[in-house]
Length: 340
Image (cartoon, rainbow, N blue to C red; front, side, top):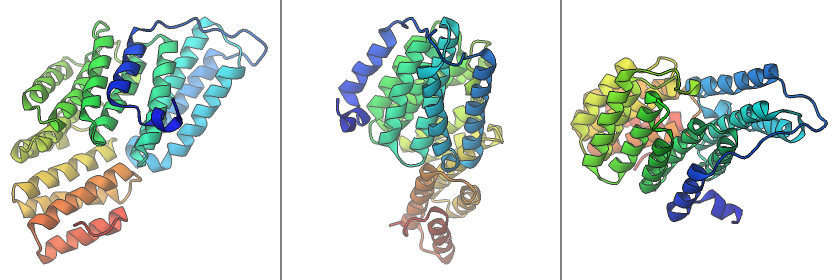
């Protein structure tokens, strides 16, 4: 497959790729040739770097970490190629590569490069298979689902989320399953399948209420009721139910992790959009300013797109001086032209 085809894999090709990941067994992974020994201490240190980048992204946006993530991934691949390790260390190293590739793909996607991001996600799936940890593959698929419903391929989102759910269903990972169900719900919502979306959201809510288990992955620290409600609001917005979206997004605002600044800004931009669609221009304007207060301090192309879309919604329903002021502010915040 050429690079363009690889990056754009979707539809039937994506289904086949995901199926291959889900049924293949992890191959033996050991390299005891000459080279620096890959110790547990080294692996822990490298994992801390990945975790630190993950936290920086959530609080500051991908623009600060995308290059750092790629550099860290290059280092990990170099260690895998030239280091010396036994089976256990090899699996851990593959898992770390999978985690870092997934995160770097997400940083890249949030920076506005969805096709490049896909290459990282597919690489993460391969590394996850080598690690023998299906939770890591599910994590990569969850971001592939976001890419799908964000780029006009909602069926890909459903395919990816379902494959991940099937792979982890026996692992007792309620938080991971809840997150994956929200990804599936977003895909259904973009397809206009309201019943399927609401069913998935209901299941996600029930699983989230159970709380995390000891088997849930450490990198899924951010899943809570606020995230579930925010995704529910996003689904309602896509389904043409702005009133329900406003209610769900208000609940999300109260329960979100304070460290997830970009997520809060995204949900606020969607809440403002819903308020504009409901005709509540004053409340929407207040919410829009809150979203932009946060967006001004974040480096996220994806968030900027949301803010631009929010301003476009306002431009269609109001032309008051206050509305024009908000729209002008959105231009300054996003660096994009005046919404039409």
